[in-house]
Amino acid sequence: MSEPKITVIIAAHKAYRMPEDPMYLPLQVGASGKESIGFTRDDTGENISVKNPFYSELTGLYWAWKNLDADYVGLVHYRRHFTLSAGHFKTADEKFAHVLKEAEARNILEKTPVIVPKMRKYYIETLYDHYRHTMYVEPLDLAGEILKTRYPEYAEAFEKLKTRTSAHMFNMMIMRKDLLDEYCGWLFDILEELEERTAGNSYDAFHARFFGRVSELLLDVFLEVRGYPYTEVRVLDMEKVNWIKKGGSFLLAKLFGRKYKKSF
Image (tube, rainbow, N blue to C red; front, side, top):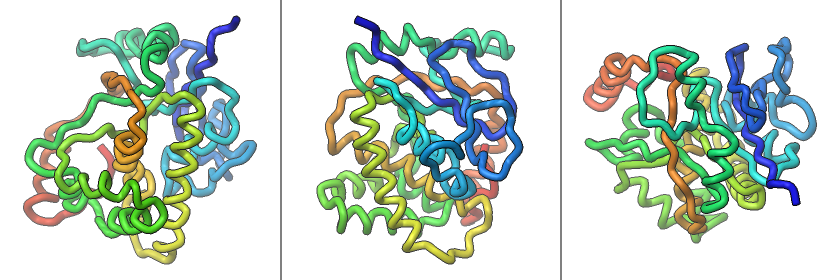
């Protein structure tokens, strides 16, 4: 009997070094109308590639959901990977040597059907307040309204965003395929209605990508209600994070209402 197949897409919009482990599938997200960067494209098969300027890496998740034939399917980013190491690495070679390997993922998935990042903690404010300070909160509020009408059993878990201070972020996960099917069916149904309700909005290019940001917070809503067991795994940043600049932008957002203008 063959082992279950695990395929983890790596969402990328530019050419970048990729792990050599066969579990990974580099995927060019937002490929529609763009030159090839040498990876599998998200504008093949059943896809929503044209929505990438708004959905970000979720066009990759949608493509994986609709087109991959695997027992477990996951999503990571070209500059963020799962790792089992707690070390701090300086060189790219060191970092890539410690990216989660198929054998490691298989060992985890034999015990729990879901892998997610370790929770990010917001020590001085709730998840909702952090979103409200750094982004325009109206789309998140609308998502909550959609849940109340379409999926009322999830409404209580959504309201906890106003008291919780930690979450599994980045839209990163590896799930057993039947659970991913359930999650994506639920998530993209919500986002489709959110898209209809926010049509004609005047957000700039950065803030128009709110679909991906709202979905980051919806993942925990889904997991809490469904009760599927998961294992948390560290996230390895492949590029240096400017924590001073990021912290300064957060303080400007919290204290003076200056919304974020770019990703960090």
